[in-house]
Image (tube, rainbow, N blue to C red):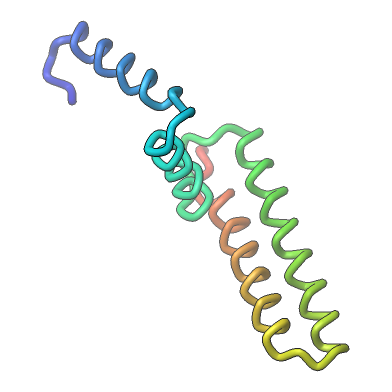
Length: 105
């Protein structure tokens, strides 16, 4: 994108920000949600401390729910519940790992 024209870069930046902030109709909401899911799954090298703590809180919620579901399902003998709980725990562990993977030094 850097072609040496700062005015064009600024206009492109402004247009991208306007498009991201138009979060009221179907295609725009999907596009903006994609950025969130991508940041949660892969991590972000430019995430702030607050964003990392938010991702970590969400991950702890998933891990806690997964462990709770495994415990309840084990008592009831539900194999499907155990699998769902393990999936939630694994998802939370992945998000927790991604939240702190790309920390700036």
